[in-house]
Image 1 (cartoon, one colour):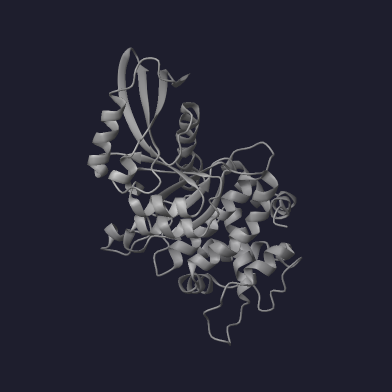
Image 2 (image 1 turned 30 degrees about the vertical axis):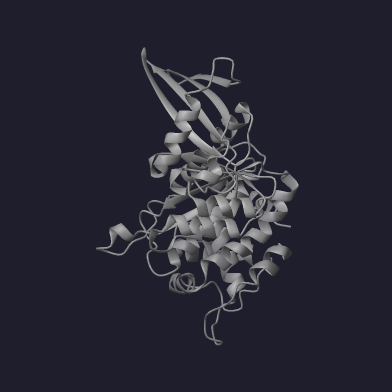
Length: 363
């Protein structure tokens, strides 16, 4: 808890010098409330008052628990990137104990409830870098004016990519992203679609020359009434990286996915640009892991933590509370005891000892 207190104390306080409530204490109150299921500022204040004796164990609360208006005002003002960076320093200790993460997935998520009346098309978006092996958010950046491309580049600036494979969808298959990943010592596996039409055409042509003896990797899964087969192939890109001026391009990957449901068979080809000639099995694993940012992070934020229903709308408020949700989810994911995310969040609210157990990981 001392590391937690010291790190959050580094967040700049934008309020006037006569602000009554200590910023670090306010942030801890808000974070623990979110960890226990709070979805907004009103619930943060209610939780703080209901659990005042718990918080008095390690906070002074000289002026009591802040009101919901105070929580709202503070989150509208403080810098979301600074708040996320502070939490990142705390969770880095957890990540170090859990080991290295081989794949880092990059993806954006819209905060569907975070818009003012009449501005539904401008709902806030958060772009996250997610360590799939750790099930942990490494960094999160708000996408200004829904510019996911620039936000993704900003996220990469905040993390160490050495020895990692960065995965992303076709929106991020462009030269700036490739150059950023290479410059930071990582490798990329980026989905290749029609937004890079010329490069995609050349990749298809290369695979058209592949013979039956070329190495492949195959997986087959059967669940929920469907059978899915995926076959991966990797080929050398030759001098096409130079020709297309695409930084670091060394190989192309292809995954042919076949799905059978009730006797009906569908097949889909997916292509990828690679900065290293991965083994076909590694390509399959990396792309499979990429989807954990949707199935693990985004799904949990919506279903267990109600992110899409959250109505924080003003200024930096949506981004800051989104940071709290992601970091609270990471803390629960690091806990090894049995139980779903939703159950553990409720348990943290019900059981002060379990709550302390989760918080004790931040040391």
